[in-house]
Length: 290
Image 1 (cartoon, rainbow, N blue to C red):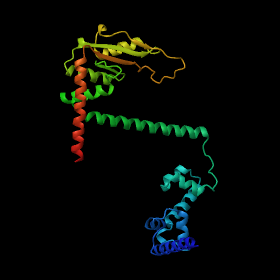
Image 2: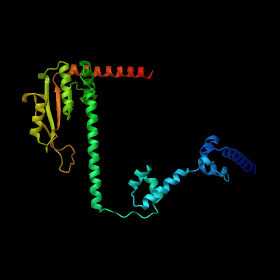
Image 3: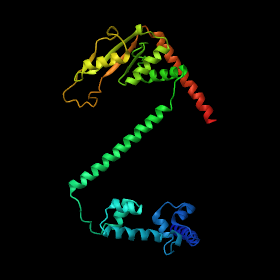
Image 4: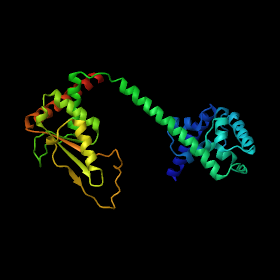
């Protein structure tokens, strides 16, 4: 009995505080935060019978918006047109007008689809133009690279995309594989910066059997400017007819593997350069934070 009496007294004490705050003009959320009450049912019981402050009631403007939406719906407007007219969300419009009859369709489904398709195609063209313009501005902002910038860029490029020695395969040699022509060109420019001669370079094309292999070989030869003697045998990948490959089409030319002969010492230097960049980056980050 003592426990029940204590619980009742706690509730009444809490209710007295809640009512006082309610009469001071606080919202339910403010009362909840002030009294640390996280049970909505209990909160509603505490303030039961007390009217909500005027400032928490739904503004009249919302009612006017609802009535206007209903008027426009009765005039035959779609959700899209009402949204453009009033600037409110479609979900709100749907709640406000769902009891009203749908406007008669003025166009056939085919006509409506054709109009929507034209609008979507125009939107795609604008998006592509914006994308292209963004890329052009970004490219123009780079400007020329200094030898040091090219050097640092090449180290990061190799450590991201080049082969690396593993505990199970401790081969220390420089090998770079990529399908992006720009990556290959940048890597070759970096090797020339390091003084690696063309005589120490070997190339191999890796490509799927269904591609135009001869065309790909010609493409990579022209890109690198290397003679036929620098190219090894092309590696052709076979696959099941059920394989659903995405890298197809006339622009698919496989990957080019670039190997540097007698490159163990160069590999070790690349690894050291990379660790040096990492440490320098940490120091720079620390300076930025402080």
